[in-house]
Amino acid sequence: MGQRHGGETAQAWAALGGAPELTDRIRYTGPPGLLPARLPVRELARATVACCALAAAELTARRTGRPVPAVRVDEGAVATAFVSERHLRIDGRAASTFAPLSRFWRTADGWVRTHANYPHHRERLLHALGLPATADVADVASELAGRRAEEVQETVYAAGGLAVAARTPREWAVHGQGATVATHPLVTRQRLGASAPPRRLPPLTGTPLLPAAGLRVLDLTRVIAGPVATRTLALLGADVLRIDAPQLPESQDAHDDTGFGKRSTSLDLGSRTDRAVFEELLSAADVVVTGYRPGSLDRFGLAPEALVERRPGLVLARLSAWGEDGPWGGRRGFDSVVQVATGIALVEAAADGTPGALPAQALDHGTGYLLAAAVLRSLTEQAETGDAQFTTLSLARTARWLVHGTDRDAPPGPAADGAYDPAHHLRSTDSPVGRLRYAAPPVTFDGGPTDWATPPGLCGTDAPRWRDG
Image (cartoon, rainbow, N blue to C red; front, side, top):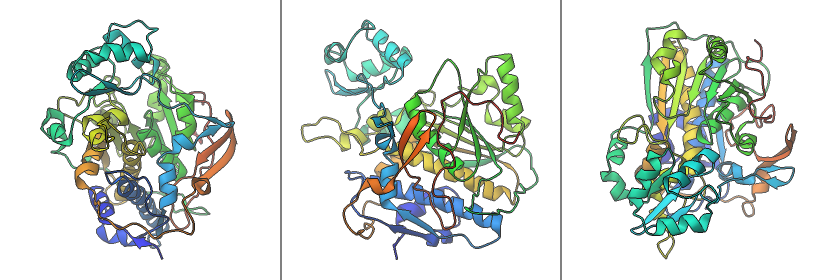
């Protein structure tokens, strides 16, 4: 029998509004010592996956009329899934990850980290530094060596790029955004709009049990955290349609990792024709998940209140880097730079003081599983209330939980026979882009799915319609 849940699981489940006694349904198995770090990354990873699996099991019970299925969290599967982008192979080729100009740089007074994976971010970074488009790592290093980290951060931000000065946890705590983040819980959930009748979901039939079957999800997210959430909802049976703007194409390699079970289309919401298509999709949607900066989609009528007015009873979930408010509430951000701002990089620094990183993009993956869990819990609650539900999470809040809130002293799970081998948690399938090797989903419960129904397709090429529409 596996180990029971630790305190970090109870914390996350409480933040999601779940009944505390349900955590007794969770057991952990697998080898100890995975995702090693100074900070409790293992504890965060297994707690977020456990809560997501428990939320799926809870919704399954609601739709079957039976007790909540048991949840067993395999820590080897969790550790493998938290670095899924590193395990991905496309016809044997490793996926592209960080670009050469996405890295730490020594400045005159400390360190700064830049993010330049997307071409437009690279162009803005070089423009802000006064460097030509042909500049390489040596050119950027030379330029930054004589500049202050904070000055680089603000100059690059003003140009629409991404650079963040490294701070200690104490320095982040007194920073305006750090102080703002500290006033919010890990997960915020609220009801929106006028009262609506309870949501009536048909009973589940057949196997595996798919608690999100029959639900339609509009996925307006990018990179890792949001796509991990919607990838999980697709695993659980939802019809997930991802929408990207044609002027901001996504990396196909990134989509090959997070596009399982989904379809992907391209719509320009600034176009009258495409906007009409979106409104038609919205009129039949059950869930909308967004992962852009707070307020950035409002001009398209996608503010939460506006969406609920047009589609009462929606479940809304919004992910951001820095949070909903504060001086950085409107800034762009990714896991790597949030780690730097919040003190994680310096906590994980090398002996020579060079900033470090977590063994996984754990803020992204962990927040993604919490986001999926929040959607599932909202759907369960709607069976009683029917009211529109709005949830927000942020990478910065998850970072604060990692640094200050999780239980570092939680005992390890029981050792498995033999050493950890990620190959046990990898699968292969053919896809439109070639033969894929990928990490198996870590979210499992008795009777539930063990893999996605379909592989990812070519990003942006699916028709903008629901599967059964």
